[in-house]
Length: 128
Image (cartoon, rainbow, N blue to C red; front, side, top):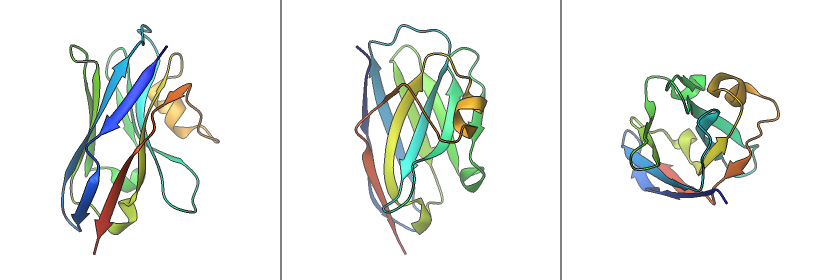
């Protein structure tokens, strides 16, 4: 059974930084992708960043390009999201997600966005 457990959320001021982590267990697929999604109050869940499980190609939604970095440590089975220059509009619940077949590019741009597994989320709040 695949389990995704996020951590690292919190409250910061505009311009601040946070690093989210996602511990992944039970996933044996070597294809597909890992991703970070977010859902602000009253809005649909959206894709933030994704990374191919094999090869490591990354893709970002336009609003976070240049500010966020997705990475993974295969030895630690952990996915990360480094978030810099945070803005109030980044406030949301952030979810770690995984799909065993879709590429990062395809999964992040799908509408509606759909991943096979997702964690419970970690809250990020950015105040002005």
